[in-house]
Length: 66
Image (cartoon, rainbow, N blue to C red):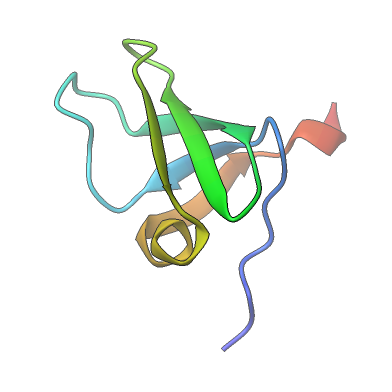
């Protein structure tokens, strides 16, 4: 299985929807842990990179495309 490609400031879709009703998240910090911020309510969550890779569905908008 190919590793998922994602980078800082990318907008990603997660497998589960956030309680506020949106499913778009922005990657705001990367390292051993990844911090993502909800695009709907601006709530941020830090999760381990391995868990993030499992829960991420796809990259919606890449930061380096702009």
